[in-house]
Image (tube, rainbow, N blue to C red):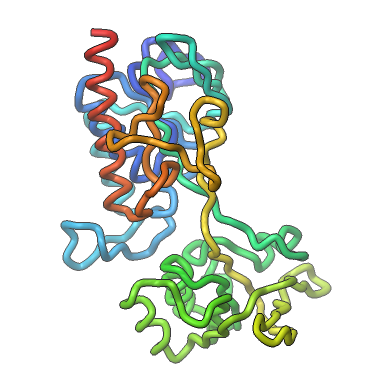
Amino acid sequence: MSAVEGGSFIDDIDIAVVGGGPTGLAAGLYAARARRRTVLWERGVLGGQIALTSLVENYPGFADGVMGPDLVIDMHRQAERFGLETAYGRVDGLRREPPYYVLTTSDGDVRAKAVIVAAGADPVKLGVPGEEALTGHGVSYCATCDAAFFSGEVVAVVGGGDAAVEEALFTTRYARHVYLVHRRERLRASTILRQRALSHEKIEPIWSTVGEEIGGDSAGQVSSLALRHLPSGRRRQLPVAGVFIFVGHRPSTELLRGLVPLDGGGHAYVNLWMETEQPGLFAAGDVRIDSARQLATAAGDGVTAAVRAEHYLQQRFD
């Protein structure tokens, strides 16, 4: 029984791919096309952050851009055409039993000859009072998912990088006013995004300021964001109906802890072939050190890891 048909898995998987974002999908495509039995595990929605992006403008080959969900569907269909199997579930553990790896999944243990960890990254939280209690009730980490719920409302976007500015611009399609709260005096986003945001009539930047608490109303919905101006220490309450938080991402490398060295931010050390220090274990995309965190480079990482995994199988098992 194959990995996608139910709870029983057979132990002849060549390459296991953990994560169904662009890195994992690209790896799955190349691995399956090499005629290796490849199973990809995804715990949530295929495509990762790209699936939640309305328009992707900087992926080569699409002169007019491409909708994120459409790109994900096409990438998945292409990989499945060459035999990629997809399992929707968790991978909770990974251990080495030479020369194999054993993955502890939500459907049982699976043995694989090589593993590509491409689990992406999770959003970093502010860690302020009210954030956890109001998540899903006005606090969001995905404007593309939730901005439509705030039609005609005033909202705040916290952050100053590409993701924050892109989501602030998207939110203007629905909200009547968007505060862009950033702890520095200028945005870190790319020049073209900065220009778009700062010239947009609905976006009002709030510089050198951090959010300290998210307040709710009697119905349990977001009603305010408490701000502190860093240079002066001055505090004020910002009435808002929603708070979108984009202050970074934390790599999903829990599976790798204890197996390979990680840096201070939790990223896996790899060489130019995405190889970790464990033979047959690869880390690619946002989980590795020095990732550019771009769609094109994420896909390239997956390709590189799959090509090297194929070489590894040839040398070790064929």
